[in-house]
Image 1 (cartoon, one colour):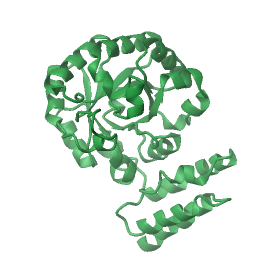
Image 2 (cartoon, one colour):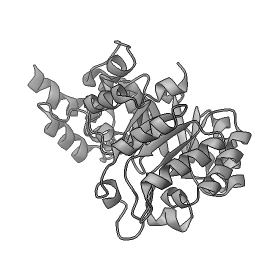
Image 3 (cartoon, rainbow, N blue to C red):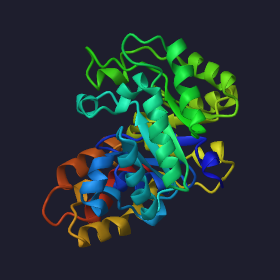
Image 4 (cartoon, rainbow, N blue to C red):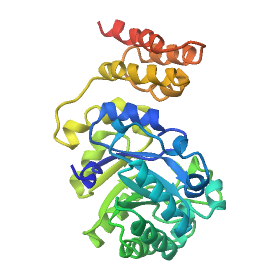
Length: 328
């Protein structure tokens, strides 16, 4: 399957959430959904601990690296390193609204500099053979999205990018916190659909406020090429991902949440044997049974016991007992 087909559904890059443990869990739930790393800055890759920043389990594929930065040469160098690590796609972040990102002149602030973004992606495309994509907002602060977004897409696609994930909200860099920027600015899905009409040759995924697989199917039916889901895929992963293969990719070979837990146990054992802690993995599993009988007991048992010395797979099995007892 081509990566653009995988991109019919993707799990958004989310700081502090979509680490390799989260992605491994999500891959067990959907074989085909495109997964993204947390954003990693280009300077960190060039100067930092690459194995820690970029290492991932081969079973996570297809997985894309999201890069942050605004220096074409740095981004090209980081993209080359990422390609060597085996990532299937390199994505440039033009949407993150955090203060830390602004001070580094990357993220959503790049919506104000489409020519610079075009230079950045052109350098990355020249450096790697894997696809280079962009995740953006519809504008920032006082910009008019109706003007800004088509100009941004035109300039950046002319540099060679043919797949964009559009978070259908403005980012308010003045006056709103990063958390508020995920909820407060109004969503404009219609503008995203207008962009698909203006640029029919581009693969456009819509992102922002999408909470269910039903919604995702609706957006695909309306003409979007892909749907990117963030927090719902993290907090209620079973609702979003367990049926995704059957409903989005016409692959009926799904798993149950209980089967996924059992498949996580060898991974957890390996992580602990390598010096890791149980809680580093199970924090991503808390929402696995959301809405089902026993979900509270599952969450509570993991939360109270995952950080104890010697905690391992047996803690997960004891937590699962809260669910299976009530299902019996």
